[in-house]
Amino acid sequence: MHHLWKSILGGRLTRTELVGPRRILDVGTGIGEWAVEMADKFPYATVVGIDLSPIQSTYVPENCHFYVDDAESEWAGGPYDFIHGRALMGAFRDWPRFYQQVYENLVPGGQLEMQELDAWIHCQRPGVTPPWIQGWNEGLNAAFAKRGQGLNVAANHAQWMQDAGFVDVNDEVHHVPIGTWARDPRLKEIGRFHLAGAMESVDSYSLSAMTEIMGQTQEETQIMIEMIKSEFRQGLHLFGKYHFITARKPQ
Image (tube, rainbow, N blue to C red):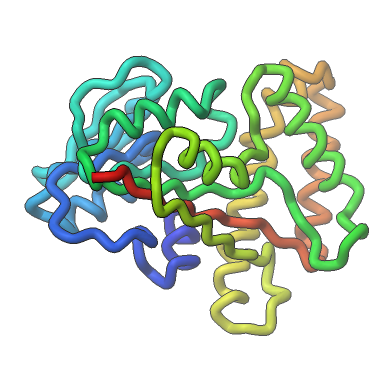
C-alpha cells in the first residue's frame, strides 16, 4: 500500500513542502517504509517511527529510529518539525485528544500531514454499489462503532485539526479507482495496485470485526469475504476517497 499512496501523489512522499526539517515523527509507522524513505531523503534529519508492533526492519539509515509506543498515551521525545500519519482509521478512540498532543509536540510553525482514506467503498454510478460490498461498508463501520472507534472518519480530520488550533488546514481529496476501469493510463495502473490492496483488506478487516464483534460465525464470514472479493473482481466502477490533509502550527 505504500507504493499506492506514493503513486497518488505522483511519486512524492508528502503533499507538504518541507525545507530542512530536523526532526520528523511518523505515527503508526507499520513496517516503516515511509520513515525509511524520508530518512534517505533528509539525511540531516532525525526520523522517528512509532507503532504498537515491532515489525520494522533493523536495516535502516542511521538517522531513522523505530520505537514501540502507543500514540494514545502521553507523548515523549518531541518537539518535531513535521508529524505524519497514514491510514490510521479505527486506531484511536479520541481523535481530538490525539490532535492536541500533535499540536503540543510540534515546534512553532511546525507542519502536520495526515494521509487518510474513507473506510467506505464508493461507486461512480450512484445507488448501484454491489450488495455484498455495501453490506461490508455498513458492517465494518457498525463493528468499529461498537468498539468505540470511528472508522469512516477521514472527512473529519480537517475540523479536528482546526479545533486543536492548527491553521492553513487543507484537505485534498483524490478519487482513486479500484481496478483497471479508468481510461487514463496512470489511473489504470494506480487502480491495479488499489484492487490488490482492497482484496487484502477484506480479510484483514473482516475476520475479527465480524466474528468477535458482530457475532457472525467463521463460515458466514468466509462466505461474505469470498462474495465481496468476487464483486471487486467484476470490474465495476468502484473507487475510494483518499484524503491528504495538511496543516501548520502557528508561529
